[in-house]
Length: 523
Image (cartoon, rainbow, N blue to C red; front, side, top):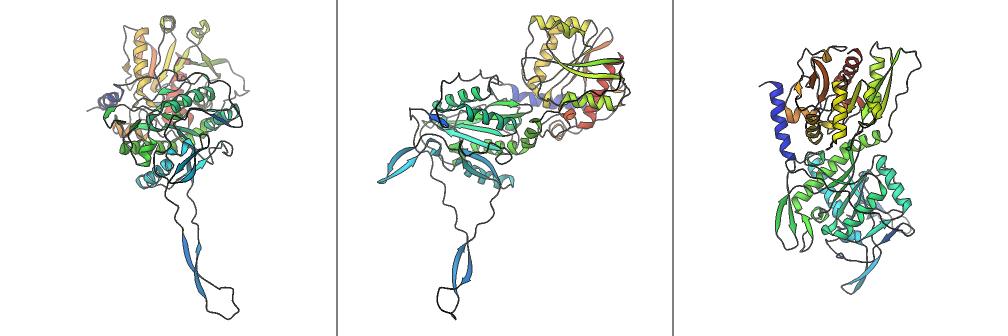
């Protein structure tokens, strides 16, 4: 079986994950005025006051040693036990204190209670479980909005969990925004699937990240395969009945990383390992598998988040040039710029490693802008679904037939973008179809002589071992008009590890990108 046949077969198996793809609408509406100092909690305490047992008491680590009682010397040494605290493992997830203080009477004693304490041992129990499963050593901590440092280097992830309504103030929202942009992750769970908490969280996230609506996560996303390969999950209702359905997680992406992840169906009761007759939850074993994947994903993407927090910019050199070459990147309704440093790195590499005497520039453009038709090359990428309307289809068709080149790649090798691109380019050029470029095509040899390439570990894992370049294209009147890679190139251009990417490694990705630029200039 040829490498392209293997790729096609593996691609079909990946498509099965997308059979039930769906999207959620932008969640929540704006919240009104908020109070001080940090949070305003809902007046309706609709949720239960107890879900799971309290965490076990911390063990008293003692070491035997000799000591003297306060008696005149000489005396015989007596033994006493002294506390000895072992070093703590690093903190990975902080559970945020939420809910107003409430008092309940239990066994004749008044006990202080807050909403976030309904599953007091949830994330701690999860980390003990995942530490054993994954061979790692991390701990959970308790935190609050007043004393939290908002520095992801100190605490990579925080967890919001509860039943009742809540809202934050503007200062906390701004600091949470910066926390995620700096590489931190916000996890959230509607305990018992409680809708009051879910509505409040969605509204708050809309205020923290305006213009970035939460969306339903697709089955192909790495959080569903970072450790366990998850398909449909088993959900349990309050009456004890169960049903199987696709994962219900929602998220917001920041570049190639999901920085906010929310479950409207309960996970924390499952992490805690208990059941009760109310709400909607993922069954215990599968809730812990989702939790293990979340922990693995946070650990795998933390450094990427920190890298993405500081976008590199390519400053043009002052050496004289004969002409300018504009690398125009198409904006579209999806996540059109997931690798903010990629193009700048590619342009710098092309400048430093070719004899082209041009000044490279990047410009973000729209198909509806008439000036877009003046650029010789248009580049586009993304993870998710997108659509072109009739005007955009018409303008792109005229651009390609006039001699322009469209260059596209699927960021992280995501199938959602792959399917959308194939569908939309079919509208633009309905009489043509993407075809694999032969090994002797000029785009592989116009600068670098590219015969073999290296792919990321995930490609080898799912598609098997192969090392041939797999670009596809459409030609018009014998001239290449569309060039497409179903495997990611932009992550390689960024020259920083993307642990969950299906793509080419840095070197071959930069070589292919440089060849495309040279081809566009010389053709």
